[in-house]
Structures are given as C-alpha cells and as structure tokens.
Amino acid sequence: MPGRLLCLALLAAFLLVGCAGRTVDLKSADTNEGKELFVPKCGQCHTLQDAATVGTVGPNLDDAFFSARNQAGFDESTFFQITLDQMHLAAPPMPRFDEGPQRLAEQQLVDIAGYVASVAGKPTQAAGTTGATGTSGATGTTTAP
Image (tube, rainbow, N blue to C red; front, side, top):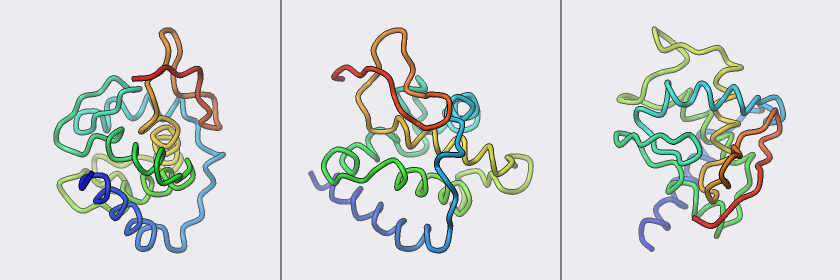
C-alpha cells in the first residue's frame, strides 16, 4: 500500500511539473509503431507485460501505472503525457531520446508514449491478441492476470 501511495504522489508531481504547457495529441500516436520502438529502446530497462520485456534498471511500468489507472482513475491521456515528458525531461541514467546517439524523432516519442499509455497497468491480453492497435490506443480482449 505505501508503494501505491508513492506512485500516486509521483504521478501527481509529474503532472504538475512535467506536463505544464505541453499539448501533444494522443490521437496522433501509432501504438503499433510505438511497441516496435519500445522493445529495443526501452525494454532493456523497463518491464512491460504487453511488450514481453523484463528490464530491471528502470521502473516496472505495469506496476507504476496500475494503481493510478485502476484505483485513482487516471486515463490514457495522463499516462501518455507523463511518459512523453519523461522521455524528454528525465535526467541520467535514462537515455535522452531527444539528443545524441539515442535521438528519436518527435513522432517516434509520441508513438512510444501512446503505446505505453495504452497498455501499462492493464491486465494481460488474451492469447493471439496484442494490446496495441493502429492509432487510438484501444486494446483487445483482456483476461485477468
């Protein structure tokens, strides 16, 4: 329970600090492309069930977003903005995706953020389906974890 409260506090802080003034539309995210980018660029550090990644350096994104999504009622647009801002603003040791050899185009960052927002903290997908869809971030049939 204390971990969940910490997660909610961190999400609130990111919203207040990181999202100020940024208006990028979640609808422009291609979540299929985002998943393709997430696995090699982010999956080495982050665990995300839908991507089948088990990184241990960064936070487990399912755990980080689960309580906020399921208990606090935050929606995908909130997770999208937090994820996008973290890719832009995070200090080391997380790679800076907006400069240097790790640089990704803005649309690629939007795609990754849209993908993470569409699946992080949600129950795992049924066999043969994927959490990512064409553009909107809607998911397929889910089953309990």
